[in-house]
Length: 424
Image 1: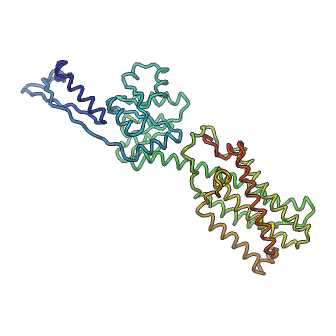
Image 2: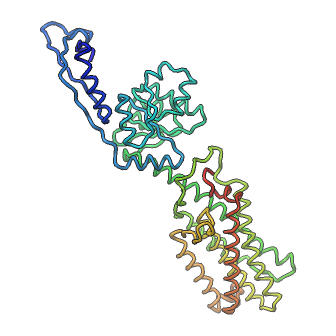
């Protein structure tokens, strides 16, 4: 506007129009023209005799999916900030459309004169930064990291490269991003959509949860296998399971059940938790111990059935079959229980099973039935044929073991171990 040499009376309505257009979320371009003489062009633009022609407003509408994605990110404990080179009023209007907190807007001019303490304060409190230069984006990233924040930075231009490189997670736009931005980033979006970032966060949390679940499960299932191998010897009872049974449990049942965890759905509250501390591991001693406790419950059920059956005069082969059936049902119960971090007593509904759980459970029980029903296989596995009443007892005891494990998940300390408490 200064190039057109407008006086205050002429410039005031134009300035008001610029602010009005900016508040509507438009990017405003002022257009002017100057005559050219036959001589050389002036080196300084102020030497041209510019005449103001008008204003052009460009709209870059917010994607329809962005407000919902920003709200989901906020619920997940992720603070979304807008850092842009746009005019402050334009940035504020677009931020409001996107659902970003625009109560405090800080300009690049303010950042330029701010000391480190003031910069760190604004980095924490402000939601919108306008008229920001590339080096100031880097300062904002550094200020947030200095405050202990994990910072993800998005960008598409060459000037964004330093901030993308410095951020904990640099995210470049794949469609309109420059080669320099893509090479500097950790992640490249195939679709330039903010919602994809939120989906990636959800996927990462789901993978973390499922890894923790399967580690707890693996720790748990080896307790009944080891216990049924050694406890009968300790108590002077006939051998409960032979090496062949251990091989079958390890290679068939456990492997099949582990596959179920690959497709375990995300927890319903997965995007309502605060981010985990960076120091938190996938699984440590607390998770291993809880897995061992789960396994001990299954072992108590299986070995209790075996010992009680023998003391009641049941044939050793039938008792062995009952114990192995209890171990298999306990294995399936562990898979079902660890499908969710929450107890069934919280919602009074069974956990949503993994897509592969029912086929795996059916296949496992079918194989066990085949081994008992076919005389040749029954002899190889040293099985007997239990009565329906004995099968019902095994099923009932296994059900009680499942309920006990679910009850343990209500304990506050266990809820922290499994991650059922938000922010853990």
